[in-house]
Image (cartoon, rainbow, N blue to C red):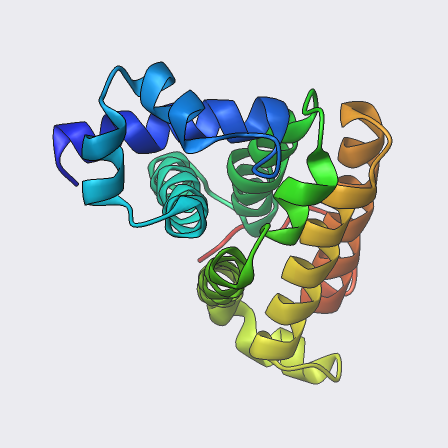
Length: 194
């Protein structure tokens, strides 16, 4: 991404997070990014394209943060904590003070909804990768790695939108983590990755 594109997407992220896409005009984003509207429209044909780019940009940052955090992990429990913190909790914090969180959560447009679905697929792929070393235990509990990953991602992303506050979100995520660990090893106790 070019510096100008990054500057625009970063400004759009902050503006959309605060006001929602519906209440944000392209002129607002141009002003926040310090670029002309002509430059903005040259790089992003319309607000829907910019919403989709913003969703993708946030996800890329979150996934990069997850990968960095995973380097220090020694157990699936720690890996799940990193995944939840760097994706679900950080996204919750981004929209927590928004004037229009429903608009943000819905993706605002078809382009935004497609971007959200693509990001969800990336989440499932990442969680599947974390669970893969435990395939035998997961299958012994009657699940598959992909189904358990899909369950985990669907629940976690839903919690992000339904939690009353950050404390409630963390309680829900801890319950989900315990459920996943039970499916992996039959207990909620820490199990180190070999």
